[in-house]
Image 1 (spheres, rainbow, N blue to C red):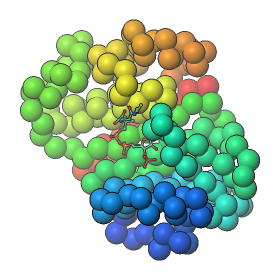
Image 2 (image 1 turned 180 degrees about the horizontal axis):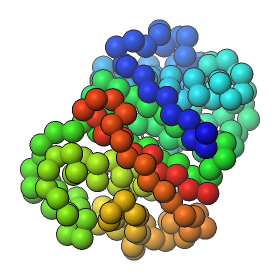
Image 3 (image 1 turned 45 degrees about the vertical axis):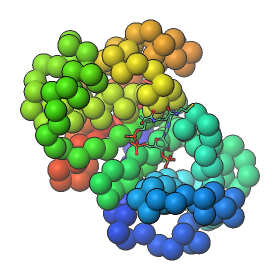
Image 4 (image 1 turned 90 degrees about the vertical axis):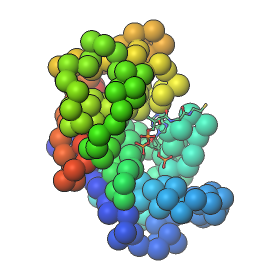
Length: 206
Ligand SMILES: CC(C)(COP(=O)(O)OP(=O)(O)OC[C@H]1O[C@@H](n2cnc3c(N)ncnc32)[C@H](O)[C@@H]1OP(=O)(O)O)[C@@H](O)C(=O)NCCC(=O)NCCS
């Protein structure tokens, strides 16, 4: 399979010292909010399980250390890891994606729930707002966030500059520049309920 996905229930995590390297553990100690701690740990557990299955490296020798861009730096046994990867967490779940074959991936997981029309209008360009129900809008949200992770920009770009129309991505402004810097790969979106009641998108490109 081109992209492997791992999801983890944050209530079923092993102890941090079975997952983290010393440098990760040092950073983990600086996180104060219990929710953030669980999510940060869970995302790494999911990612490390995937990398372990591909390389055989022990979890503590796989490091995903924070970077100012928001996207962690991934190393295996101290060497830069060439695999494309992405992390997401939401409402008690974390997930990771790793690909050996695709050069770019981004994932996002969000709970399907009613949100205000003001939120939808501020986040989605009018051309994207073809329906107003919560399942459609949550799916759209995960597509957009998976795409900004694939680009590596996060939401430092304007959300209107990454548009999803009928499951196809379109880039404008700073997002288009970031997309071109990647070499304008053909990007595919797969959107589905990874966990019942939680919408998930995998964006991947070669
Ligand atoms: C990236 C963003 C889409 C995250 O989405 P979210 O729904 O809030 O959070 P998720 O749980 O789905 O994803 C968080 C994960 O995305 C990843 N991530 C964060 N920034 C990223 C980026 N620029 N590119 C790719 N992945 C990124 C991280 O792995 C993070 O998890 P971790 O901090 O535990 O390692 C968005 O919220 C965002 O841009 N946040 C601000 C980050 C930012 O712009 N920083 C710039 C500082 S100069």
